[in-house]
Amino acid sequence: MEKDQMKKDEEISAEELEQVSGGMTKTDLNTVKWYKENPALVLESLQKVNNFDKH
Amino acid sequence: MKTARIIDILPQCYSLFLPPFFTNPISIESAATCRNCAMQEKPDSHTHASINFSSKTKCCTYHPEIPNYLVGALMSSVDPEHATGRQRMLNRIAGKTSISPLGVFRPKKLTLLTRNANLEYFGRSEYLRCPFHDDEGFCTVMPYWDAVCSTWFCKHDAGEEGWRFWRTLRTYLENLQKILSRYVLLKLDFKPPLSGLSIDASAPLTLQELDDLPPPEAIYRQSWGAWDGKETEFYKQAYTMIRQLSQDEFARIEGIEHKLLLKELEQAYGLLTTTTLPERSIRNPALTSEKISQSSYLLSGYSPFDPLKISKRLYDCLDFFDGSMTNREVIRLCHEQHEIRLPEEILKKLHRFRILVAADETR
Image (cartoon, rainbow over all chains, first blue to last red; front, top):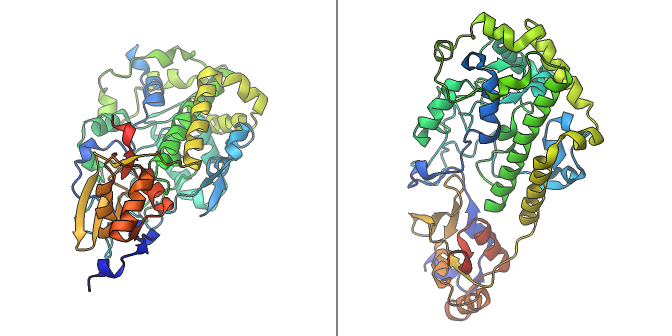
């Protein structure tokens, strides 16, 4: 008997949707917005002080 | 589920003056296991072709922007665990590259590289590995790192709401770093004046920046003023000032924008701590799915770094969520016609991970 059939009329359990290690395989990474992109808020102004020769 | 107060996961120098909101509890992200990196390929990985991070970099292909007072906190620490971090920071200060009275920054060259690189660099490029990351894969300056390092996790127990909360906290902390690092300069009556902050950062790289060399001596001296040669002492002084800041003084200097960022943070926290189900749901049209065995699928609804492995019978149930029936009707249909019972907690998790979305979200 198939495992799925055996489970019929059972409640879906937490084990049937679990977080796993690693990521997806098919994703085009350039569409990902969830990485540590450089902070926009402070980066520019912090670096400005580093460039006093650019007056 | 392990929890901590928000304030307890941040550098201790914030504890005296951040608003009472920061005493709220937050769950520790249990799936983002940094010590045993959840994104490294493992023998029991669901597939050997998935997005994985290199063991040499983990997610630390990011150079932090450490504000002056946190550099000072690190340099003032007597914890032996920070000995390596302190030495690396000392070397950085002695090298005079990408440092200023505002803090220790990412070299501009690295910013240009990351902005122009295919994102496959993230978690993999050894060239872009953080200089404070050690060969055992650990951070040598934690918790004196920056807003991004404090708030980035590859996986979130609460799915998108978790990501959204940490991302909002990051914005709050970035602005906090900006306010406090400038407050230090103002209080110390820093010379040269702050007009240096208005210089155009989009200017081309200098020869020194290209070759990882310190700026010309005259320019370096100009930027440090009387503190030239006493940079470490300056950073320590900055830390002393910030850790003595009172709630009243902070409220006086933080400004309107920061007060608004706190409102946003409170809102994100509210969404994180309450999950309400919509009346009707549909399968997320942007869902990425992969069949990984005869009985299971891998689904990614909000982040390709944080997929859910789900059973085939649950996967098959997703087709019933097409917006034509209410969630209650779908649950009844699954039970009566397919002998599958869908608990509300499972539906909530499907929503948190954006496997399902509200039917009206896509209209």
